[in-house]
Image (cartoon, rainbow, N blue to C red; front, top):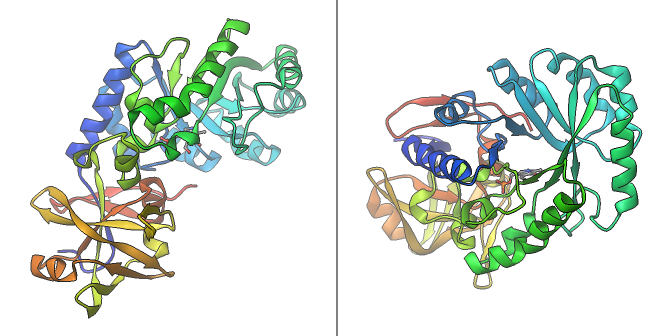
Length: 355
Ligand code: PLP
């Protein structure tokens, strides 16, 4: 068994998650541009090749470079464009067709001057909580941006994009549908007003539970490849869909309900969910073969840089004779902290840290 903090991927669950969303996209005639920032792995990326993938989505030019070198030739960089990207974009455009998030009328002419090949532009719409994008009510900014793109030699307008992180506050399908409804309506409205534009929706909870996609052309979720304990609480997936677990050594038993483990923020990240009043930074699981089941009321209750404090049924963990198995709260962040994945069958899956 693993002697130090190790991240385990279950390839079967992972492939099943990919298949479920890829087939859903096909069923609804949606373009599927999965976000690869969750796994950051060429090998896991290859598992998507079993399905008709129209292109991939990434969050940085370095991540685009890694996947372009691995043969992906249609790449959306789903992060607001800034001029510092141009150096890497000049190299990238030799290998892949690029889609960028433009948000200022000067961008099209900057790109015209710097790049040689055609580029597709998305306009990101603010999902309402101010992370990024232009407000749907700011039609003047949207129209000016589209106008600037229409004047460009190299940039063509692809469409509108929303990543609705608001769905992460939902608990249950009804709340997910309720949370995403403003973004959904915004995309439908934009489609009615700009019929040439494609519309893209980005988040895993809505991709997982929506069964109608009227007015939506594309989906770009990423987290679904692994899911995690937060997605279980949101209702995007069942515990049996989670495909990534951390194996963390027990270091010091403090009492029957408290232990220190080698697993801190540098391994799991600091994302948490609330278990009643308490913060849960990772759900402890018991393993039986390839199956993992929740150890009730037992979780990573505190974190410092490398130390984690588990509270709950420490004896059950000791009795299992195994390291402490922890289901990540937010697998994208946890995966980003590990240099490789392992499988229970003893294989290593290459990945990179490219955020
Ligand atoms: N698109 C963008 C712009 C994002 O920032 C993200 C994630 O943060 C995604 C898509 C994928 O969303 P999820 O992690 O819910 O799958």
